Length: 286
Image 1 (cartoon, helix red, strand yellow):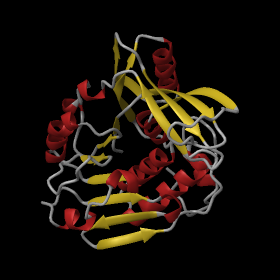
Image 2 (cartoon, one colour):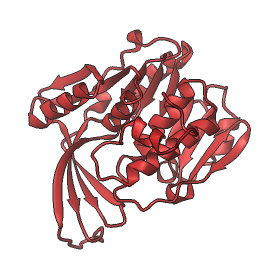
Image 3 (cartoon, helix red, strand yellow):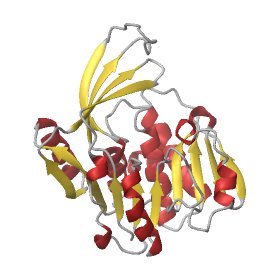
């Protein structure tokens, strides 16, 4: 079985439930507040670990209380924390405003240091999956080395997606992908970039690959909090791809996981067995 390596933010989240997301200059009063572990790296890593996969987290925390809590959460869920660096600065923190619709707005605290984290290329082998849950230009040299040795490299979209991007899969939302001509980017590449997967919320998922454009419908749900849905989708998609599944099968697994995640106010995506049990024989039993 392939090992999974998740390179991304490790964040302590402060959540405020508000009646609506405030406009510029506006004010809203929170009706409920809470704190929880989070960050797209943490969400994806813990989700993958719930499928009994070997998962290694690459990122950083500070020598503070949030950092100690996050380290303990990752370790307790079976994620390898041997590549999580502990620094003198602050652990990343984010304030999240959540509206009744489940939509949210986020504000980060403290300087971001993810770009300074070394990617352990020498410890990663062919057939492994590396997911860059946070885009940083500084990761490109490591991505180039990894794709060259046969590693499945997935990443969130860079600000400008180019055919020469050294990744096999790009996974991101419509907002992250922007107005770029994704089909041309995939078709004119050198073969490294196999697919661009675009999540579109209630409009489902679109996959651009050499076979063209394929759409997959979303599952109709009443969202409670959309935080973590994209991370759950990425985890389901990559877990299926690593096991030899088709992109269609991977999209189905990702959509199912994202749908269940949106219906929960939990701080991380629910374990895969919860998602699988609701899908009968349709979903893989990893």
